[in-house]
Structure formats: C-alpha cells, structure tokens
Length: 225
Ligand SMILES: CC(C)(COP(=O)(O)OP(=O)(O)OC[C@H]1O[C@@H](n2cnc3c(N)ncnc32)[C@H](O)[C@@H]1OP(=O)(O)O)[C@@H](O)C(=O)NCCC(=O)NCCS
Image (tube, rainbow, N blue to C red):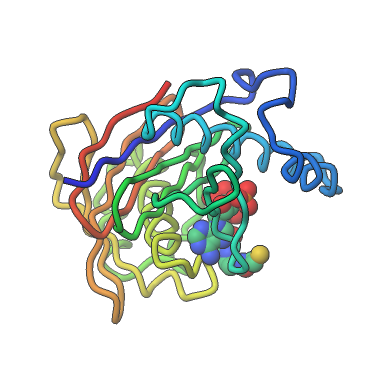
C-alpha cells in the first residue's frame, strides 16, 4: 500500500527565524510583492517540509536539505540535496492555514484546504454538475456550507492531481459521495473525471476547514505534527 503523510500548519506554528529555508527559497520569498502571497507561499513550504520529514524519517535539523521548487505548471517539486525526491507532493493554503500531503510511490496526488463559508446558489449553478446540485439541494440548511465546500475542494484536489488546476471546466469532475468512511476517520468520496477515470477523495472537516486529498491509488494515511 502506498504511504501518505499529511499535515496542517497554522501561521502561529511557523518559526520566527527563516533558517529552515534554503538560500534559493529565501531569494524567491524576497521576490514576492504581496504580503498574502508571501505568507501563503511560506506556510505551504513549511507544511510541505514537515510532511516530508515525517515520511522520510529524517531528523528535524535536516530540514534545510529540503527545497520545494515550482514546476512550470505551478505544481510543487520536492528536492533533497538539490535533486528531485521520489515522492509526490501537493499543497494548499487558506486563511493562514496550509495543508501538505506527500506520498511515497507513484500515485497522482492532489490536496486542498478550504475555509467553510457560505457560497451562493449562483456559485453552485456555475461550477457544479447536475448531480452535485441535487446533492446540495438534498442537504439540510445547517450542513449546506460544508457540503458545498467539500464538493468544491474535492474538485480542486482532483484537478491538482491531474496537474491542470482550474484551467479546465470544474464540471468535468463529478464528486460522488456514497457516505463511505475510511478506518482513519476520513469520509471517502469518488471523483469521476471526463476522459481521465476515477480518483478516491478523502475529506474531513477540521476546525472550520474542509480538507480533501485525492489519489489515483489506495493509500495508507498518517498525520504528521
Ligand atoms: C492549482 C490551483 C487550482 C490552486 O488554486 P488556489 O485555490 O488558488 O490555491 P491553493 O492554495 O489551494 O493551492 C495552491 C498550490 O497549488 C499548487 N499548484 C499550483 N498549480 C498547480 C498545478 N498545475 N498542479 C498541481 N498543483 C498546483 C501549488 O503548490 C500552489 O501553492 P504554491 O504556489 O504556494 O506552491 C490554481 O492555481 C490553478 O488553477 N492553476 C492553473 C494553472 C495556472 O494558472 N498555473 C499558473 C502557472 S505558474
């Protein structure tokens, strides 16, 4: 079974010193013009490195051996001592919180974190499939915001696993939740993609955020702290 490690990291958990960044990362950080982008990028790198340390079993002081580069399509590329690592990495940030997921072994992987907040009917009509809209309509008003956020996040995770992001129509991914749960306290939905088959998408609500992790293959999941 493919091993997957994930972590969520909040802004307050970030070390005050930046000595855990490589010099190339420091340079990239200094190049950001907007504070929000700088914060998101930094927190994402921190979360990615925490998850990578846990997956590899490397000690915390080796953190500077890790560098998270960016591929031309925007996806993160984990490096160890200047060479690409044989792992898959995905990351996401929302409201000063980041989610990173890493897996050992070749499976397409995408993750997403979204703050649960109201999204309009127009949003649902524009971005969701007919089946997803029916699912939202059948949900009690009390749970509507988290149901909509979950579907949206599962789409984003899946589109990241496909390395396309929101360049494609979000209705090309359909989220089907049969109410299944894994043994590790995650719900598990299926995401079915036009011309690209099916993904398993884990989801959970965690302190007001929806977390989703989409993978092509079955994975064994563990949390890094
Ligand atoms: C991928 C995408 C859906 C992320 O959406 P978002 O809600 O704004 O942001 P999230 O915080 O959830 O995720 C951002 C992370 O997704 C990752 N990402 C970006 N593009 C990606 C892609 N094509 N495939 C997989 N992951 C990608 C990055 O790690 C990014 O964080 P970072 O830039 O700090 O490293 C969005 O960026 C997108 O649609 N990109 C389309 C491709 C594009 O325009 N790329 C720009 C080329 S640089």
